[in-house]
Length: 101
Image (cartoon, rainbow, N blue to C red; front, side, top):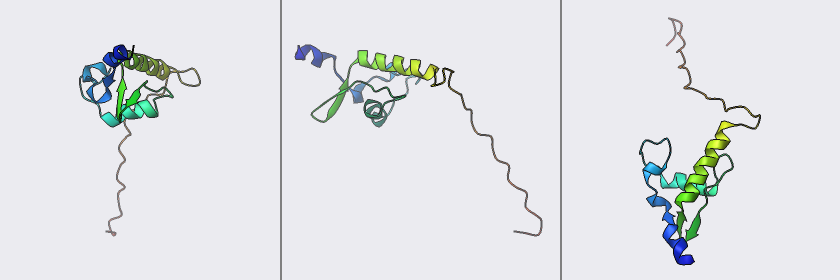
């Protein structure tokens, strides 16, 4: 039984970048994945296991995590889609009076 589980475990440092939705094959930091395991996103944590100082997960847990985060992101506490905020508008520099420096 434990040998079968050990075959399924993947170190979080070796998660392929293709497994991360929306990243276009860009790698993601190990600390980010550790944060997902410990703190979570929208209150949802990535299932993981720590063995001899290394953190492991499975592809099934990975898929469940991203599906749950996707579902949580579509609805906020009020039952509406989340507000999408764009980039901040640039501030105009104030014009100074001619006599001051």
